[in-house]
Length: 185
Image (tube, rainbow, N blue to C red; front, top):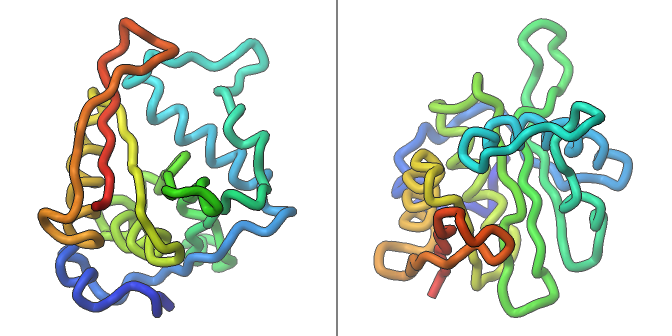
């Protein structure tokens, strides 16, 4: 199911080797699925970024307006729905920079019910392994869980000492805490 993730990276990440889900690239007709899941992603981030839905009741999705694009890709994690048995999306990853010097993650989310099962880590490792680096991973200063998660993934995928982290001001929001940037070396 995950041929691109090395056993060493799996072992370094400390998760069960057999978690029943699959990762597939987002097809053109599946971007509306990502847009729906993006609402849950932005809802999760609302407390961190002081975000509110807009007048139509939805959170912003401006990033997704660029997709599909040649310089980016999206991935959906799927597993059987416990009630229907048909494949249901349990997470997404949106990346860009495929044609540039660095790849970056625009958004990454896993359904709360699938968290703490190793799904997020395995999904992140799979997604990173599909594209040669170097990589940049950004997360908000106040998103403590994301910091723990992405540092663990960086150690597992890039290797301890093979990535750096720095903080940078959020240019559009000068009063916001700085964002954290993990960069593979």
